[in-house]
Length: 92
Image (cartoon, rainbow, N blue to C red):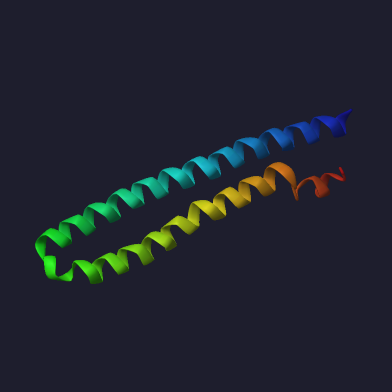
């Protein structure tokens, strides 16, 4: 019975951790995209002749910025469906 309590506590903490990882990763990405888009528009308005070069660099940074929440989603799914901490408790 004691083991079931530990497993239940671990799984509930894992669900909370997965939610925080996914939620905060999404929030950070949204803030980053907002800042990135704002700075791009600002710099394009200031120097319109550099718009093409700035747009290429913006898309590269956007791809890198988008990778962080995707990795967070992968870690969240790992915690939810294949929790490595359950092995420490001896659970299956």
